[in-house]
Figure 1: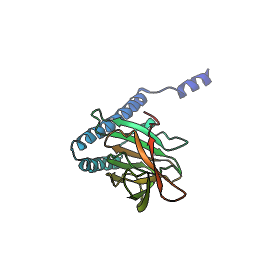
Figure 2: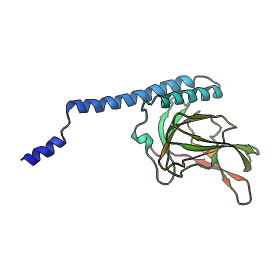
Figure 3: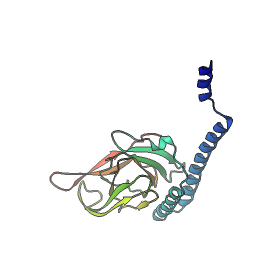
Figure 4: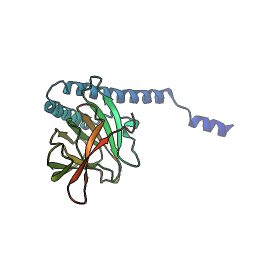
Length: 214
């Protein structure tokens, strides 16, 4: 009987414990709702460049505040490639929020953002970002690129990408997964990736995008 009581005590929760868990969940939801409200305000301008830089400031502030606004499903990784986890789609279609999780060595080819402005902010870990200058026309099937800037970004550091100056690669070179938050000027369902050719240059290929979790 003593052993049975000991096992039962081990799995008994006090009311205070349950209240603490509920408060924690509520606070996380509140922080996310606050972020969404600030993003709503940031995209009220009809100027995409203005929206992008306002969003950048919102993301930097949200991450640097150290308030947890992403839950477990937003930070799930994928084994075969980086994960794209949907956080929010604006009902008015003005923007979308995606959390991306990068395992060690996971990254992207050179890509664009379907002619949308984009803001990217590191939430956890560290990523390598290389920006490229396009040599050729935006609609050309075969193009070339010149590397322009290489940076390593950590938590709270963000970048604003405005077409046509938005071609880049992202890669996690750290041992642990990294998490980044991306806000696009709409819902980006496809983009163009640029694949290197043995003969030189890059082939422009359209790629459909899917969510890992929603």
